[in-house]
Length: 90
Image 1 (cartoon, rainbow, N blue to C red):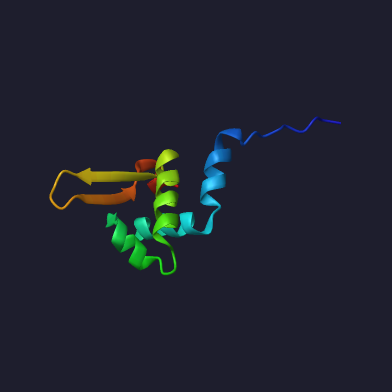
Image 2 (cartoon, rainbow, N blue to C red):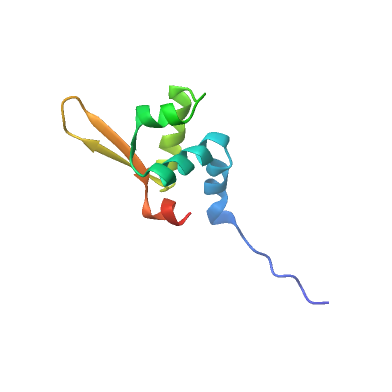
């Protein structure tokens, strides 16, 4: 009997944990559809998400490299979010 090959998804474990959350997939979808969005625009597109949940989820998506945060030194400050190259391939 031939031994079955074992496939290790270990490198994907953190990514799977993040994207398996409801809001994470919806954020990735919104950024994929609309390109660059500001925090408030994302909040408006994702009806029902709290500001804390949006902020936490964006931070987690940034930490795994799917989302980029673009901060501009303007008054008032402007911050935009977009999918990274990896996020676009996702």
